[in-house]
Image (cartoon, rainbow, N blue to C red; front, side):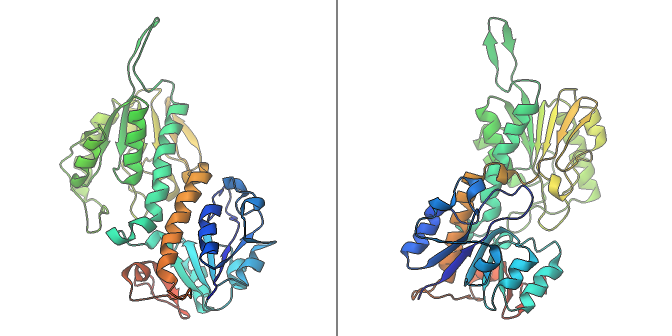
Length: 370
């Protein structure tokens, strides 16, 4: 059986990624499926229309959606695109279920099956499908590059004829995938790196990268490896310990996030006041409110000489590699949806599928959104 798999061009402002890259699309074509690509879908990620060998190029998103069995996207498509998709179409992408859910509920009512890649369960079996992790790798790397670019100092220690420059002191807040990549990148650039995470179990990973773990005496790890919200007492304990380290930092990269919730406020105005002029904060949580009280999404704020950068959608700043990683995540998930005969099967008993399946058979099915 041949499946028609559609790829639409992203419409969100500044979004340069594509849901499937040509090499991954070629694997689906070789497996006997038909891949339909909206014209220009891959241009921003370095894949012009002529790169999609053996794929069909369609002139608009509605035309793609109207004829495919599976519709692939990076971000939630516009309502008109979802409206054009036929009943039973499986839509796979980062559908932002915690935002404007009514639009997704409407699409579910029209008979679309919706798979939200952000909800792929963080279990061993699903690691190869974990979009949050793959894209966080890009974000952590880019955050340090931004910090190095806007900082008034160099990262490594340099001994020159004009004297010796001391290495920059960096603090990374949050030792998830983004934080660990930020640590590794800052170390590669020659900085002295400290890291903080409210999950005590992160110490081994932090130290394996050559950074020192900041110990505040607080451990808030939950089942599944996520971090829970702190109590007021824990928050005060954390803040007192962290403030001492931030006051000595030249560069701070903050990555702390709680899925579906506003970003925890970790860096207060008072902490920033104690930092030296010329210090830099790059707040990866800017899109969900920021870890710093002074963060403005998409802007760089100068507070008494301390630069606070609030980048948004960092993975899109490296669209070629971000798309390559995203495509592999999606391709691995598709392997669970395509049966031995090449047909489409949404197995609601599969723990990976059930974990990220928002809607199926005309209704919302995910336990968090029912």
